[in-house]
Length: 347
Image (cartoon, rainbow, N blue to C red; front, side, top):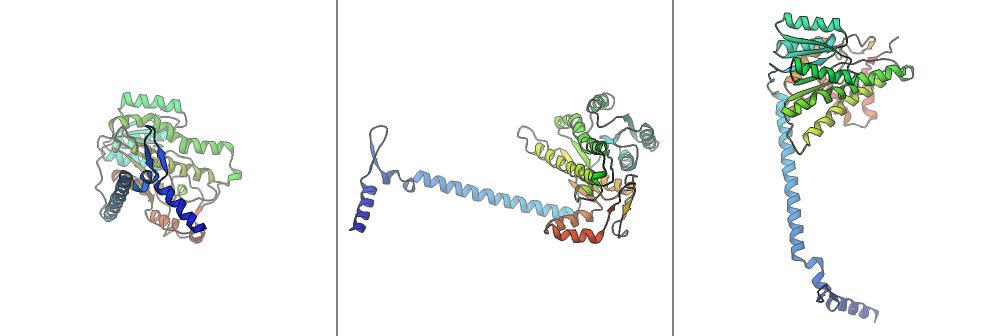
């Protein structure tokens, strides 16, 4: 009897229940059921096909891009010309900054040398000019935002709009975190990362206006792998990579204008003999040797001219890091301990 009552009630609900609409008309529940709505079914089918096609297009794009990148690994893109580009380099008075300036000067770039040290800066300018290049000298504290804005206006007036910005200036206190002073920590962040923001705000707008330019930021292998005695330095160099990636996406995703003509390159050198690394520790010198500023500059210029997004110097460390990141965190630590390289604390 209970079974009969259940089926009877279900039958009545499906066939005789009425629904009064706003106009006073009536419809059965069956007529209102979504599974009988032909338009609704059609929309679901259409949406399903559209999503499937989008996924297919995504797969094709990703596969084609991967194959193109694989091709470029074996056949690198042709280096672009920098002739006539106005190239501003911070920290141009010595080390990698100077060597990079000399190489771009030989390639026909108009070099704007910026450094806080007037003597070293003038030496760089003199060498460029002796090699028949074009160079201008400006002294500026890159941590001073007002000084940077004043410098930018002066460069526009005297040289022109900067088309390549190379944020190279940096400092590296090397000691355990608890022995690092407040002044050293603040200075590290102001020079190594905050100055990048001030310089970008000063020189990026003209690049965006013309959809032409190149931003180069000096990070480090210490911006990829954490190292003892370099905690604040590592933090700033990790931040440089984050800054560049976020800025790239901000321009790429802009809906109002195309900024694909502005390129970004992050440089991550290993230990470079610029005077900052006073007590290097290297277990296998033949495998992970200390780089000269000249070697580093050769790689920097090549990466910029080929529009590479990010490089390590040497390049083998880039692929080694990518492989290690695929393993659980504890696994590559054994490799790191085996290689046993880094910096001892400065006395």
